[in-house]
Image: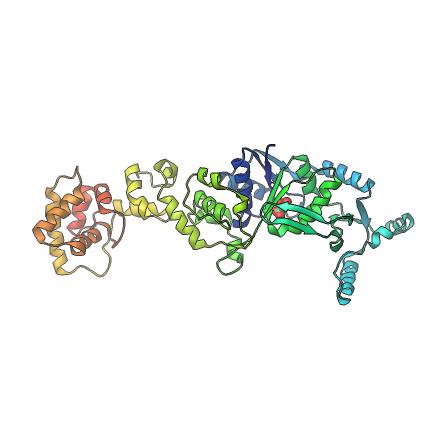
Length: 448
Ligand code: GLU
């Protein structure tokens, strides 16, 4: 059997951490098993769906390198939904109901007041043809409910949650279509899963109750349900996924300097029993991907963890992977010199600014003693051979002629040469700064 998964976002906003994770799980499961990963745009809600978000979805998935093997749009499939709907109406599995939402509210309140669960009472099923004709003559258009089969419990083996069991008698017959003819999510999704040959539905555990209902829809459509995996939801560092974290869109993550590899590496492992690792390549993550390793407890998404992982990813990125995002004059050697000090790729430009100058030494100013030391350093620097390893040659000579060592030897030089107390390895940086700028900086000029 070829595994076919799907990611089914609604184009009502940018992808955020939660749904990137769902996309990633589906993509990984398909890739790990040589299967197919489909994108389904859930745009039946024509008021809330926007074309710009469909475009953004494509961009976001491309940036994350989670491209789909095929794509479907629900808005292009209304004829199919209508045909399946007509057949289910004819088979008595979908029925018209005429209650207004106020009437339904009232029914629920009465049930709750009597200590009963607020389940739809199926009053609409008791209507005669004459009742329906009368209601429709009054101009009342029906909405449509899927009639659950109360005959047997709904059961499935969830790849993450294990054995699941629901009693259909405790659930309301779900509304599948509104009075204006528009579709709710539930039925078109099941129709598409059948039609697209989806073998595995991987999504968040907020869909578990929907799955119970959809399992009966698959049966009513004459199909075996796919296999399901419902992942525990993410929570934010504060306890639950805060608005801010929950709404961090791909565009914002990208602007914050987060690499797609960091997002993938974190979200592939979050909530599993495997450690988060700074994997630039998906291969090791794919090799270990297994729903059996997913936990039932909510997983904690922590921005700080993402940024730490990001730094460890950046430290591995080759020049070719980042050259478009670096100052134009920056060379592979320069990238490798500054890379270990970066948290994000954009910070490379700051260090390139330090190389090109001008630089200003940080406060507090140097002591007279250090000033004299730098004057000696400038003389020595003028005398050495700059083609080899100028930093080690220079510091060795200064050690011998001044007797300085450790911080007293190195820090005044670093400050004068870079304007900072910390930074990349000076042995790598000094050849980039070069002789002329270095001499000017040691002599107290700006060295730009
Ligand atoms: N559009 C639905 C959602 O975003 C899809 C759910 C599903 O995976 O079936 O929640």
